[in-house]
Image (cartoon, rainbow, N blue to C red; front, top):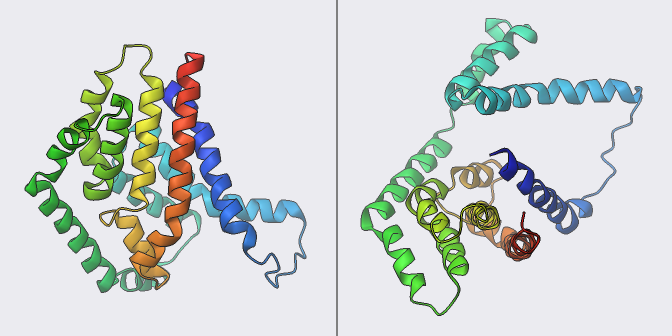
Length: 237
């Protein structure tokens, strides 16, 4: 897992760079805010804003704490550290309950289960294997379209073992990196990806508009994933 994590770092850096080049650098830099404090003040402010996220990630990754328990512990710790009183916390319960978002999430999960029940995912490997293309490309397509249709967890459970069996032990890292990159990229276009629904609902944009804006970045990322996995294979990493 450590080797895989290190191997994915360049792809993570590339993903951030692509997002910055295409969209973020075009945003106006003048926010109207005047910095009247020393830089260390703003660094401390940033750390105070990020420590809850880092704490949650450490609990999940390092100690294998379930996500819902890690988030609950983080909320409790944050309430203690920030010295929130009950009267201050009470309005959060009402403001966090967004009926439209909860209904959208429920419908997405139902849609995902319906797709799984139809057996569409099970037919994908057979469909793409009929194409006259190399096996690594077959699995890349399976993972990409399978993630769009049913989400990453279903396709990983169904096909990862099958994909790894097609390569020799010791040379499976390039394929693993490629498939996980394709899976992540596809999730940015998947209607069953709950995070997309949350973002669309929060920013009051349609899911279709969000996907159209994301599609060029996803295709560029997939192309780079093929080139990077090829580099890993050639260098024997």
